[in-house]
Image 1 (cartoon, rainbow, N blue to C red):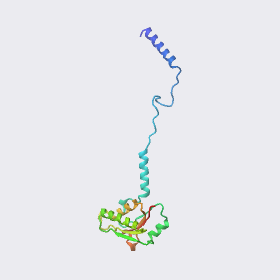
Image 2: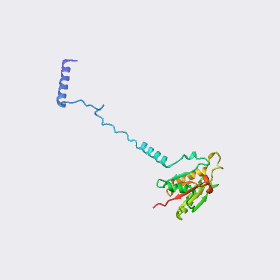
Image 3: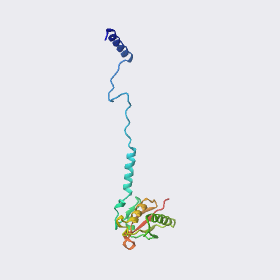
Image 4: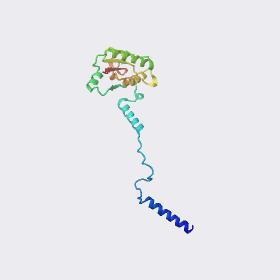
Length: 182
């Protein structure tokens, strides 16, 4: 490197420093040129957690775990313990009933939808659904009972249901309280 090259580089550096002015080093960030990264927003994760929580609060027992003889029990949050106690004791007058024995799951679902619709149209308050105990279902378990349990929980017009008293079918039937949306 010649003296001229060395001298011009020093002059260039001095000229640059005078043009730029005083500088301070940047602290706190690794690269001052890049804006800070936004914090991750786990909206899908929160939605999944919320869905799981809602299902855990409303779904009740796992439908696959229901066995022959298991009692069904469900009540919405607005139903009091007293009402549930009376329902479980069979103290409500049964105003209508349907027997789903021998039906396929699809046929039973259709028949149950029509039955509940008719019961609501006639302003029935308490109905009985006979689904059987599932003794003929073999290793599949009580198919209709599991379907009834699942369907009734998802219908807003169903306020509560529970397995019937022995005299009314026991664990092979349910009492259902209906509510009317305003």
